[in-house]
Image 1 (cartoon, helix red, strand yellow):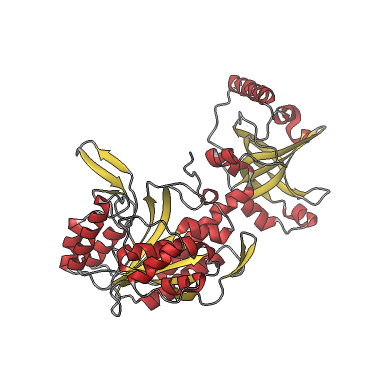
Image 2 (cartoon, rainbow, N blue to C red):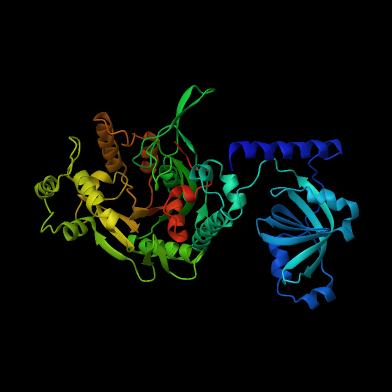
Length: 488
């Protein structure tokens, strides 16, 4: 639709609104919507024409006009709300001269309709309207019903247009809700307590990421938007709660991509006295149940490829996966790791130790090809500042990440509860920060103080809700599963 035609449509609709207001229209709020459209269809959609005639079922509902057809003295309109759509039938027999006003209604208008259910000659469930009320006048035209909304910029920048015109888009966010309900249900079943922790932090912590900064005027104090709730949730373990979780909004001042949005949703949960093996099984269950919440099977399709989440997920170490992918015989020593990195042309920065180099090699050569679900274990101590060291090899930590379809879905580890070790690691993070690493952690004195009172041994988990929704709904961009994504 060109600009000239669009402007004419908008002018015509404004003229209609002016006439309506002159006649007393004032965007009313007194219509009684007794039933959702989906409930009407579910309750009565299976009844035959004869059954409907005998039952004489009266309904009263409301929604947006998404289709309109005039046929002489009658008007057919399809009306839609969140739950579904139904046809309305308006005839001169019921409305007399008012039928002319009904003909002036536009696609996009929101109307209330009351009347009796029947079936048309084409067997379509329909409301024979006895009463109607214009509730909202739409001044802009909806996208073409058959072509839909095509412009990707408009879809993301003006999501409301996408949602009102595209049922598939609306369904994605209904499925997102179902996934979050599934996660909550599984956690509550295991007696985890849902909590809320601050979104503005005096010290950024809980993850390696560059924070957003803000300023509290009354306190004249710099604050940071939360990059992770981890350190606050672990303070609650110190306080005596054994199982806590938070479905939280995090903010990271980093790049934007199909899998990264500056604000995103995470599930984090912590269990005192939990084991890594038990947690691995529980994370698998959470993911599988989330997928089943919106799919009929754990054998799904993602990016036009089959993906089977049925069986127990594979477990392998970073080193073994690198050796497997790059045909490397040994990665046991620092010299071997550095030599392989140079051989495979990794651009090593001067402040990287061998642990960071090993992780970068993994991310560059292995991560994107991990299609089938896999738990990757044994992350180097250098890149795991909050993880407990392995008893049999303190250069590595009891940390695991879950990858599916080439993307990280979850990160979890045995928590470091030795305050002196944590102090030392924070100091090393400060050194990295001084060397130019903007994602290195800050030193959190109060968190160290909390640990000195004693935190029980624990396992903590972070699961990316947005990426989990992408996986379960076969979406390749995070923008498709976030209502209002951040755009350039």
